[in-house]
Length: 238
Image (cartoon, rainbow, N blue to C red; front, side):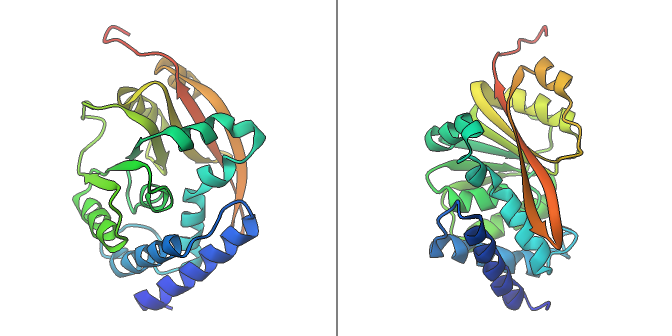
């Protein structure tokens, strides 16, 4: 199966089935329409722009989409009250190293009330993000082509997300510039991946929750969402 429309239709079917099996999210047709348009754009441009390893695999793309949505279904857990509150009240979200748009574009499609800034250093990938944003008819997304961590953020965000970022230590340093005290950082990692606790604390973050979950992909992939809260502002001398 390699025709972009056929891939997209199968991705939509798999995402809908998996979300319904979770029993934790309301599956709306408008969201699934956006998912289908995203999957079609990814299948069309994925290999050319080196966006993901398997851009025409419905199983792989559905996995990445469901994983991107982890904050939404984890927010219903008793140990995720801070995350649930942030998703309700947050207005601005920064997605670091957005790549192929997962989680940034997928979360934006599901959370239309929030405003997303997607930051991607590579121009081809940033171009894809812009194309996909238009195809998905998302009015709550802006894409910035910026090389990190060179940028000093002139604005602050209520929520920062990072998934498949190169070095977790860099995530904390960049997020520390972009987040205000009280803001949250959501870090998607495998259950075996180190989270560099000492670096996070040195950057002003304290761990609020570590939420383990599984996502289907041929077998069950064990994942976790680490929720950090920024507790202090660092000055230039620290």
